[in-house]
Every structure is written in structure tokens, then in C-alpha cells.
Figure 1: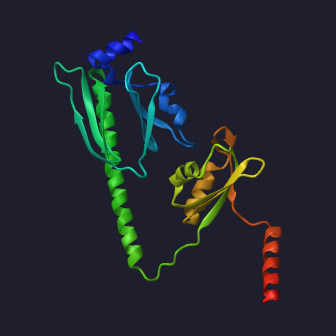
Figure 2: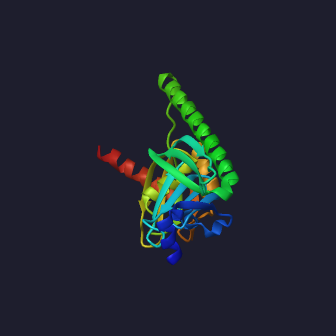
Figure 3: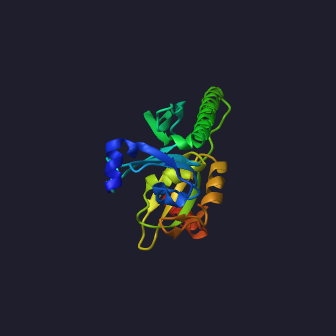
Length: 251
């Protein structure tokens, strides 16, 4: 605690160091299935962890508090812009990485002794930013072309059944997780007496296949998932056909 207080008073509590052992990252407990830490920077006050899917910013009001706020910025939805790197001067104790993501300005102070690593991270963020902007531009062009084409038919949604869910998992969780593999149109959760299940509808067959390949037999909230095509059982079709026949008779 004394060390943390001293860091706050001197300003050292804001200076991050490169984390080599990712198991020591606070963000490790928030990772989604298929998500891995790429690099992490941590001070006594805050942590910046970059994964293959998102940036985690975890911070407290001071160095000694155990109450931390966790923010997640997914690269799929939040574009990194205006990446800058400020080197350490002769009397400085840190260099600085600056950028914007999700409309928020982020500034990471990195210890002067680790400036070479910080410079590598700056390059990674700059490349990621360029890739995001390129993908966004391509997507906009594709949407414009599709909107102008009179011959393009919309695909019927492709649904997957997700089984063995815990009751802690809600529709927003599933939309975020499965949204990494394509466009999710809707999520419906059923909670019977046993474990919960859900229907996740994708815009295309390709997106649904990708989600199934990655998520089947994966783990979520301590349970092993079953992700299967949502195909009606024969008896369900018979019941559906029977009810249609009865309605026809009445008419």
C-alpha cells in the first residue's frame, strides 16, 4: 500500500510496464472463447491489454484501490485512429502511445527503459488502424453496390441451436460472442427446467458455418457448448403440417 501511495504522489502510478506473463493480466479473466492476449501494459493504477479481438482498459481511481472499472473496445466495432508515439526526453521517465478508439482518447505512459517495446506496439496499432479503415471502406463500397443492384436477392437467415448454456448467459452475451464470426440477425433464448439453450440467426450460411466451427465444443461460463444447425425434428414438422391441415378443414 505504501508503494502504491508513493506512486500516486510521485506520478509513477501512471507509468506502465510491459507484461511478459499474460497470466498476470487482469484482463485474462474477461477473455471470450477463442480470444488471446497479444500484448499488455500495466501500472499500479491501470492496465491496457490488447487481444486478437479487443482492447481492455482496466483502471481504478488510485493505485491502492481494489475496485477496478473494465472497459472493452472491440476492433470489429471501434476503429483505432490518430495513432501517435512520443519518445522520452533526456529527463523524462516515460514515453507515450496515444490514439483514439470508440470516440475516446487513450494515452499510455510506458517506462523509458521499455521504449523499444512501446515503439513496436505503436507500429502494431498503426497497422491495425489502417486495416480497419481499409475494411470499413471496402464494406461501404460493397453496401453501396448491393443497394444499387436490382438483381441481388436477400438470403434467408441461417439459424444455429446453442445448447448447454448456463442461466448467467443472456442474449447480449451471445450476440457479442457470435457476432465475431458474422452478422447476427437475432438471438432467442429458451430457459426450460434444465440448462438454457438459444437460437442464433446469421445473415449468411458462411457466417453460420464459421460460428459453428469455432464455437462447437467451446467453453462458456464453465459449460461446454453444443452448437448445431437448427433443424426441425420430423415430429415437429408433422405437428406443424397437421395443424395446417386442420385449419384448412375449418376454412
